[in-house]
Every structure is written in structure tokens, then in C-alpha cells.
Amino acid sequence: MISPALLALALGSSLVIDVADVPVYDVSPACRAAVTVMPGSFEACMKDEAGARAQLAASWDRFAGPLRDNCVQTESTGGSPSYVELLTCLQMAQDAKTLRPDKTDGPNR
Image (cartoon, rainbow, N blue to C red; front, side):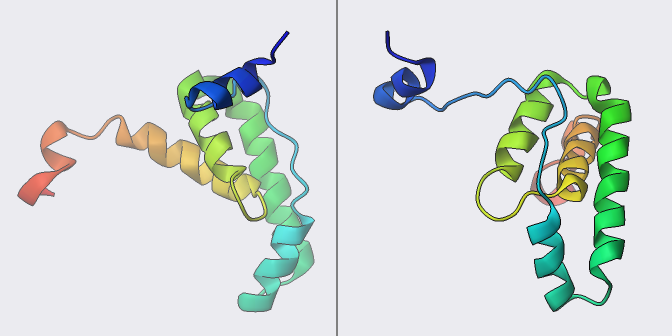
């Protein structure tokens, strides 16, 4: 039997990943990279990541499934994943849903 992922690739459709739980990331490479270009310490970065992971775990079910799926897929594409960036993506996507239509495009921004 053909796996769903292989079938999706063969048919040219995008693969949708259903994310039921907060993903598990190895954030140490991202923190190592971050401290080379920004002031701060590796330990402080890891603490920020742990805090963001805790926030995600506490509020994961409050984010709509499609928002979670999109942000996890975005965060998992290239580079080192980050809980801080995943949380930011989810918060921004959720906030964007509450914008008035006349504030989202055109000259009225």
C-alpha cells in the first residue's frame, strides 16, 4: 500500500501535517547560532525556549488546528526550530484573525 505522504507527493498536492501535541524540538542549535549574532548567553536563550515551550503546552488547545499545523510546518522548514518563533507565529496568526477587513490590505493599513 502507498503511504499517504508518498501519494500526496506523487499527486503534487501539499502535505498537511496534523499536529495534536506541542512538537519536540532540539533548540540548542538555534540558541548556539543566536548567541553568535546577538548579545546574550546560551543559557538565557535555552531558558527563553523552555518558557515558550511551557506557554505552548499550557495554551496549545486554544489555537485552532489549522493555525497550529501551518505554524509547525513553517517552523519545521529549514533552519533550526524554535519554540519562541512557533509561539510568535501562533500569536500573530490568531491576532490577524481579529483584524478588521479594512485594516488588512490596501491604502487603509
